[in-house]
Length: 458
Ligand code: PLP
Image 1 (cartoon, rainbow, N blue to C red):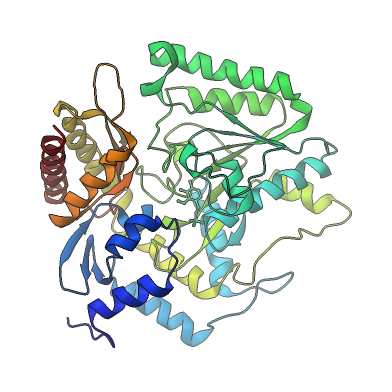
Image 2 (tube, rainbow, N blue to C red):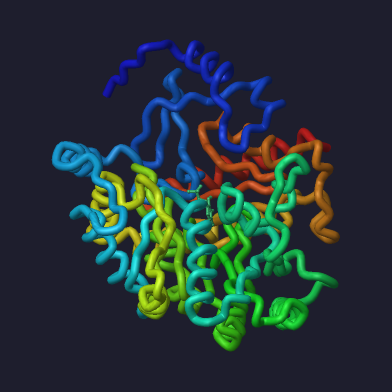
C-alpha cells in the first residue's frame, strides 16, 4: 500500500519542530533531534515517513491492544460517521452506540458495576471519579469525606486533579502547581525498593500499616476515596505484593472509603482480563476508570464504570444534578469504535492470547536479569519494565545525566524496535496480538541494545 503525503518527510519534521508542543515535551533533546514522524501502522508495526519500519513494543501508549490498521475498525468508524457523526449525550439525549457500549461494559465489569459514565480519555475519567467520590460521600451524609489517598509513583493523568492524585517524583516540577491539600500519598508497593531490604510479605504488612496510620492521622471520617492502579504503569510497572490490594480494599470498606481502580492501562486485556482488579487481584472496586484499550487507540474515549449503589445514592439526592460531563462524552463514533474493538477482542480470543503470549513474554524479559546492568525485570503478561542499575547488589542507580533508559531506547530504535524510556527504566506494553516470533524479536533486540549501551558506558 502506498501512502501519499502532501509534504516530504524533512518538511514534516521541520513544521512539527517549529509549531508543535508535544505532550511531555523534553525541550533539549527535542531541539536536537526533532520528532520521528510516523506514517503508517499495521498490526504491531509502524512505518515512518522515510519508509523505516519499527516494531512497536510500546503499543502506542499502552493502548493499541488489537493492533493497527484493521479494516473492520475503519468500516465501523466510517459507517457511524455516515449515520450519526455526533449527537450530545447531555442530560436526556443519547445515541445507539453509547447505550450499547454502556450495557456491554456493565456486562463485562465485575459485580454490581453496572453504571457507566463516558469521558474523552483517562485523565478526565480520573477527574470525574474524584468528583463522584465527593458527590457520593456527601449525599450519603458524610460531607467531611473530601480527602483522597493515592500512592507515590502513580500516574493518573495530566489534568490538574488527576496529576495531583498521581505522584511520579520527576513530574513534580516547581512551575506547575498541584493540589496538595486533601490529597495524600502512600509508599508505592515496589518490593524491589522495599525499605531495609524487607521481604515481600513483611513489606506488604508495612504498607498496610502505613495506610492505617495515615487514616488515623487524617481521620477516616475525612477520607472519601483511595485511588490505585492495580499495576502502577507509568511509575515503573509496579506489581504489588500478594494480598496487598485486597487488604487495602478491606480497610477501605471498613471506613466507607470508595476504592477507585484506575484501569486505564490494565483493562481490556493487558493482563489477560477485561479488568485486572477483580480477575487478577480479587478486588471488587467501587469505581473503575478506563480508556486506552477501550478503543485500542483508534479513537479517544474514556469511561467510569461504577456500582448501582453509587448511582442509587446520587439519584436519591434532592438536587439530582451530576454537574460533570464533556461535549464529547458518549461520542457515537468513539463508542462505535469501542464496540467493534471489544467484538474483535472476543472473537479472536485476545484475552487468551495475552495470557499465553504474555506468560512467554514475561519469561523472555525476565531472562534479561542475567545481564550485568539489569537490576530487575518486573511486570505481568503484556506490561513489563526493565530496571537498569549501576550495581545489582546495592541496586544503586546510574547517574541521572547518563539517561540510560533513553540511550537503550535510542539504540533499540536504530535497530527497528520501539521501547519506552522512563529515566533508568525501559517499559514495554505490546499489542495483545503478539506472537512467539515477536517475543523473540523484542527479547533479542533489547538484549543486544542493553549490552551495547553497557559496553559504551564502561
Ligand atoms: N491513568 C493511568 C493509569 C494512565 O496510565 C494514564 C495515561 O497513561 C491516565 C490515567 C491518563 O489517561 P489519558 O492520557 O487518556 O488522559
